[in-house]
Image (cartoon, rainbow, N blue to C red; front, top):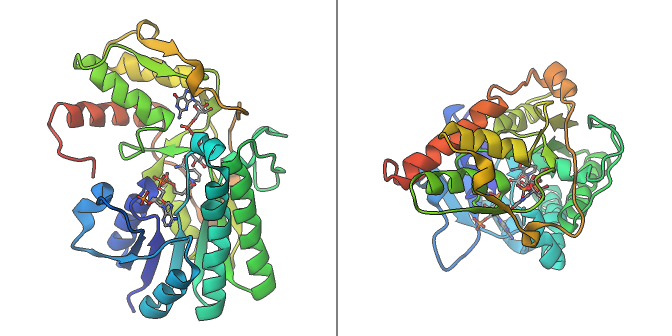
Length: 326
Ligand code: NAP
Ligand code: GDD
């Protein structure tokens, strides 16, 4: 029997990689998209004839119930969110409504329509925030440092609560930062890779960044979607940290990215207060030994490969060798 998966957030970075992965695994893929005045399908344009896109919104409970009734998925991957930390400081209520309460809306829709549906929640290392231990694992207490992080803590606990209250097969994947050539341009890694390509091609002269000392555990999004799927194939639902176990600063990311095209980052990067946050997450590094032991999951792309992959893709895109990063 072909399995059917519903992905919220299919137009995002992870949605596009997960859709590819599930299609290759023989799934029928339904992607939930929200109404917008322009088409936001750039990342899934190459999959359009293999997936069905259907309208719904995490802000609208009835649309979620209707989608579950109509399409009867076996698995739901909730990737949709207001996912940019900086924006969450300016739009804290919207972020809470989508990223926190949106999780309850979809969990409750599952409870009402079909409690046998398996559910994946996209939780985040941002929940660890001002970390209380290093490295961070499934047992590390949360200390979020942004409205986004606070919203994700709510999403995590409501997932656990619905699992325990209603016996739902609901998993929370606590994923550390994962990047790719399809990363949104506002996130620091893609902002750097894109600027490196522009500077190399003579189309920009500098790159303005905020805190260069922040450290992140950066992995490749294509590796991380495998872990999401594996969680839903277990005998019982649980929560897992997904990370590389290595941490690097924004400064190191710049060094490798500029160095890859023969440039010295210090000549181009300008520190700009506008990109500092009211409260910062200084250091993230994950311990994903539970995912290794129980899911047999480990990352395949390392830090250097990730950075150079992103710079190469932006060089191709900006020099017209690629139409889109799909
Ligand atoms: P992303 O590229 O920002 O994609 C977010 C997706 O959510 C987009 O498809 C967006 O649709 C959709 N969306 C936003 N508001 C919505 C709403 N009200 N109703 C329905 N859809 C809505 O994020 P990502 O990097 O792929 O991340 C996927 C998920 O993992 C997010 O929940 C994120 O918070 C979480 N996460 C990400 C990372 C990471 O490092 N990437 C790490 C941990 C957790 P539009 O295209 O219409 O905007
Ligand atoms: N975006 C951005 N822009 N970040 C900058 C800049 C800049 O110009 N300069 C320095 N940084 C620093 C930020 O202050 C932060 O410490 C770090 O770079 C990473 O920022 P982002 O790439 O925006 O990612 P994030 O860590 O805040 O959040 C991402 O990872 C989370 C998982 O830990 C997002 O994908 C979240 O959705 C995700 O949950």
